[in-house]
Image 1 (cartoon, one colour):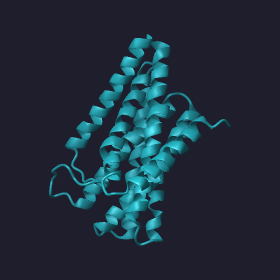
Image 2 (cartoon, rainbow, N blue to C red; image 1 turned 90 degrees about the horizontal axis):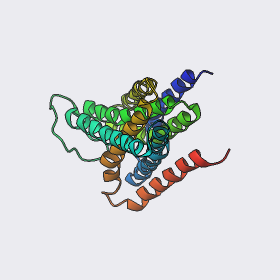
Image 3 (cartoon, helix red, strand yellow; image 1 turned 30 degrees about the vertical axis):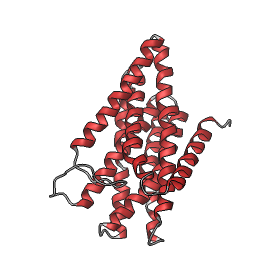
Image 4 (tube, rainbow, N blue to C red; image 1 turned 90 degrees about the vertical axis):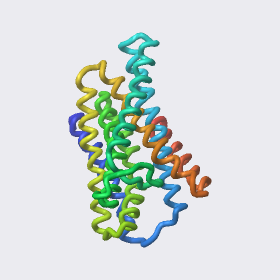
Length: 256
């Protein structure tokens, strides 16, 4: 199978996983906040490790192969900061409703809250898809697949949370599932952007890796961690985070 086809299937897996995670709404009416916090903590742990071991650190290594050591570190760290600021800009100017925490911005009242929830999860999925595309664009299908698997695993509990939020706004189960599924398809689109960006030249690869790492860190710090530790379920949330960290480290470093 060609590297391009492997990249295509990997990014589709990551995107479809959001919809797969919403399937349990058909079998259970309610989910406790504690169990949801474990799932979101698991997602945060996976993303935290992936942002470093699959993006930022490889970006520094690749930059050092083509630039001086001091300049290499500066380029990747600057790219990380630019990625972080970029997603902040989009976050501030695209109207959306938070799924994980209380809203912190004003938006156009003509947009339904249900529409805003879908916009929120689509915004959340964009940097994840970008990261997967950059991972494949780095030239190693195995590294790209590890990152795609990590994003797919953390997308599943997120898909469930999104679907539950939509049900709370009056959506039917079928509509909640379809919206969660479609919101995940933002990731293959963002992945294509990340993949072809890294393919332009070898000098763009460290920049793209740092940029993607910065966007993922924004999602973790701004969207996920504040929610996990604000409702008295710290032990459950921490258990999820540690489980995600352990699993992601095992996926990356367990000898095969």
